[in-house]
Image 1 (spheres, rainbow over the protein chains, first blue to last red):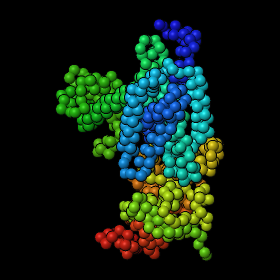
Image 2: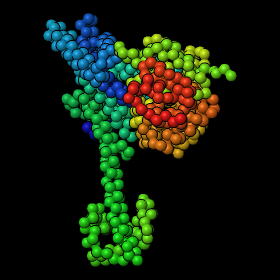
Image 3: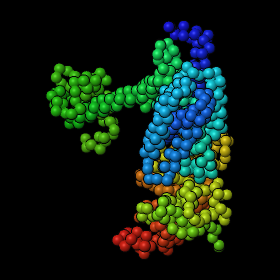
Image 4: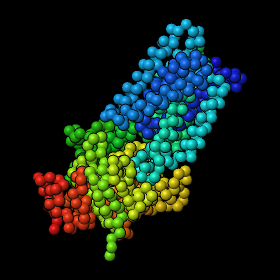
Length: 375
Length: 245
């Protein structure tokens, strides 16, 4: 299937359109809120909350016996919040560090969730099939009403974010200072955490509890590489998230037996990888290039200043000297000699070199290190 | 002339877990002084400031600012936290950080406008950081980051300034620049309270001093109480320092 055919299908096929819209909106809201999670240093909180949601789904099913997604997600919400609350309690009441608390709660809740899921599957009840879709998600089950619900939640998040933009930014950068200015940081913190929980719950059906945190973190981590402005970072993260959703859904719809959730997460990871390598300021590639460039420049300067020290012992600047005397000097290579010649800083004749006036002047002013010499 | 009292602290007690960090602190700070809080590591100097500002909840005690509870007087108080307390890799610029100083005056929801931006630029100018206004904050040196924090407090246009180790990890030039600004603040009738580590510079920089080691040891004018007796009481018997006469 070509891209054009796919796009045509996207406009004609109701199911595919619903799923694509759903994953796009999910990607956008996750990217947006993920930026806040990353900057608030709560990257792992999302992971813990999503894993903590699993027993809630199982318990909701056991109590109601229904597979209605709203009921199950309500269960997920409650147990996710309980998990988040326990983590915060452990951190404040004990000496355990946050990573330990997160790890503990994550495994505990996930373990209980898995136990309940296996228990449910052994039940003689035909209704239980498909509950395990919450593990890795199943975008194909998205309905129009789910998409509407996602849109609504995203809209509310967006409005609140814009309204309290200034306060959120302040809290993310300097929470103590925020308090001294008279802002209620508990309120702001609760607001952010509830939004993150909401985004996670929204994504459970599509991406599943195991991979959900990647949806939050990947677009934000990628976006951070490209910009030094919070607003642009949040916007970019939402864009990356949206494209991850759309492209991921496209890929998984174009090949048989490719589950949508993992493909979306993989696409988001490609965004991260590309950003880490190719972003202009923070990217590894350009960092390495700048590093080498600097080293080469320094080597060249070093050679030039060595030549200068030799040249200034003679009356005439362009007195030729043997290349040999450079041989036991560290910064010297054939390549650097060639480069100096190219820049008209020296003249090479046979096995001799001599400084040009330009080279002499440049070396003299290099870092002003020869100002106080006694010639 | 009767002294006006800027900050009055009564029976302030703070504890982390079981151990008290501050015990029964009574302290009055007169208006218009440039005061150092000195004491050994773990004496509770930063904690004192944080408790006064309500960042840490005390077990007991009260703080009043110009005769009213601190909570009603927030607008009169500015704070410079320790430089290491924030992540400087946060995606924002120097000017943006200084603008944050105006947020308290703006209150909820309202965004900074032209007036606020002008004030922020003026504050940057005062600390000599105007050329760096659009610089990403992680690309600033330690001393420059400290100046940005100072500018953020200046833009609050407060009456009382609390500063937590503003000279930590800055070079001599920046230290001079900062102390000059603090002296200007005092000249303008503001009250400045600084957690300070370098005892040698206390007589040169400050006119008021508080010795603290869990309890308040002494407080008063530097020329009267900055002596070996109080230093030994605060830092222990083996402590020696040359105090300028």
